[in-house]
Length: 173
Image (cartoon, rainbow, N blue to C red; front, side, top):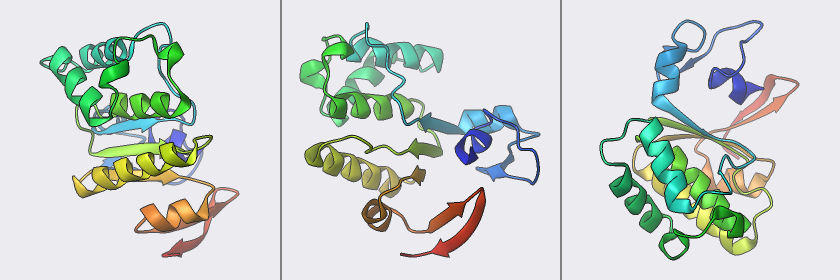
């Protein structure tokens, strides 16, 4: 619910919230222009190839050179060899990497990652952790939801624990 409100997918019934300095209720378009969301379930078109998914999103985001953007992201996320295959043939880790790559098109200031390692094997999870760390180092704000305390400890500067929509603890682990 919190992510849905902060990404303007759902209106809050009370309170105020801002993302990247923009009020989510009154400046929703500006919020959406500065964020990206990778949900718990991948938003990948399984009929398209990895490359075609990236080009499609690049075109929807009005990126100047969609093909070049796709190739750069395929390299960055180690998907070049599988780029021409339908994503239906991808492993869970590959789909997750592609989903995050699609979220990075147009360099959002804030990226919301909703349980990005849920269901991944250890190797894919470790690769995802490295990608998240790289995002943070490059200046992207990452809003991460996770049920894994070890993951929160490894990746978060600030941890907040929610209970029924209220923060009941906040700080470091």
